[in-house]
Length: 261
Ligand code: NAD
Image 1 (cartoon, rainbow, N blue to C red):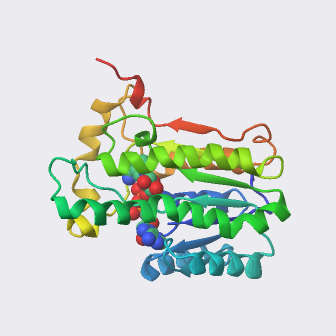
Image 2 (cartoon, rainbow, N blue to C red):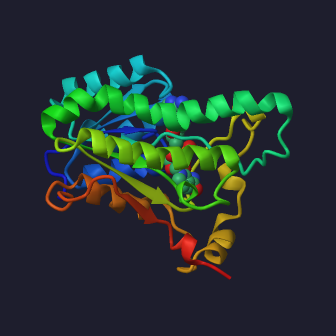
Image 3 (tube, rainbow, N blue to C red):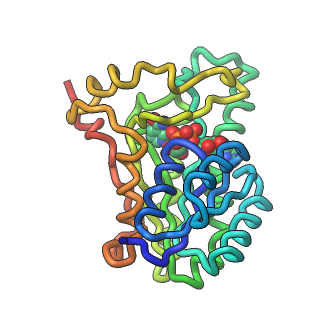
């Protein structure tokens, strides 16, 4: 019970990695609020995890939705110890060369508004409660926050931006609030959506031959799944073990950058 009596808010907690983090946090004794744009997914998670979880339907691009999620979390559980900024979208490796001229700006706006603005708004909305609890924030990065090839140029740019955001907020929010990141590699069991602005609504992450692909990309020669990554978040949320950590991004990716040739 590493998170006994702790309270977390997880964006994108309705599916994939966010759902696995919610499940693991509850297993470790926490109570969890999730903010997700899919009411159907929220209902599934709340149905599976019961009274320890509440769900708020909303869009991470909207400040009002984040404020509502923080307020509902505090109303249900009395406080907020850990914000997990996690909701994101992908660009399915779309190259800049292959993008139509008039698609670049809308695709940029959609990608950055969810993957970067969504995290900033979550941070801003959670700040007063995190300050009260002397809590912490954890943001999902990606191997694409460090290396090329984990997405197209738009996705990679957003994840590099998130690394900068983590460092600057760690600088700004010390000594009261710690701010860290987890950078997973490919995640089996994800439903990561593409960009509407690039007509990727029909793209399915599950169509990627994940089990066959991943072992070839990482030195650990394994495919990793949502639940394999959740422990990284427990580490940063655990007040006993994470005291000295702020401005850190954990490369938690099967060693993808260590592959070489
Ligand atoms: P997922 O699609 O399974 O889960 C993301 C959740 O976020 C979904 O439930 C979705 O409804 C929600 N969401 C998306 N846009 C939203 C919005 N505008 N407002 C509210 N909710 C929204 O995907 P996942 O793979 O679990 O992704 C979680 C995080 O992990 C993302 O930040 C992603 O970039 C990162 N990541 C994914 C991979 C991978 O291989 N899938 C690898 C590295 C990092």
